[in-house]
Image 1: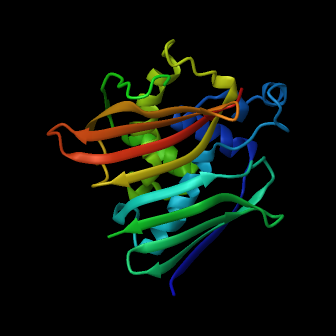
Image 2 (image 1 turned 120 degrees about the vertical axis):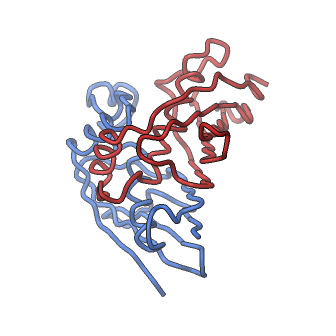
Amino acid sequence: MKRAERAVTFTVEQIADYAEASGDHNPIHLDGDFARSVGLPGIIAHGMLQMGVLATVAAEAAGGGRRLRRLYCRFAGMVEPGDTVTFAADVTEPGKLSLSAVNQRGEPVLTKASAEYL
Amino acid sequence: MGVEGKSYPAVSAVIDPERVADFARAIGADPEDGVPPTFAAVYSLGATAPYLFGDPEAAVDFAKLLHADQEFEWERHPELGETVTSQGRVVSDIRRRGMRFVTFEAQTTGVDGSGICRSRTLFVIRS
């Protein structure tokens, strides 16, 4: 069975780069004091940054990003700078991928993740 | 209830090659591979969601907003330099157990009206 996998340790810089490139400047991703004021432990990575890495791994398993026709995930856990998340994509049957994203404590951060490709 | 069924104005944008390359680098993709699939977060969801967030009738408290899940479906992926048009719509707006669940959909098409992407987002707004 074809599998693609990548471990990423998220950094403050990568999160700031994603905010700039995506245009999502929500201060929970950029300003630790603001993040704590709304009950978070500090700045957290964008869910869409995690999903972006997941899609890159899915594209590798599918034979190219342009082949992806559907992508879904739930944002189930917070990712903070310094966290290492292992993203994986497995071909379960032709045209279908089962996806996962698990942090260094073994906790899933993206759940019910799947993709379809041509 | 709420703003269920409400549609927002269509917005056109050019798939900017420089921004695509920055986006690809930020997610650890190879900029040579063209438009990353989740660049739809910019041209589809990102282009339309500000209308929802800025709508006084929708009254979304941005500080209490969680992105709970996300689905993208593509008929095709846009090309670098292509002009695309996206329109957002509130599919459902439900209150349950003191929280509000807003399902927001964006449809992106090419200049000829052909389908490119459908983005479907569940936002949860804590009370």
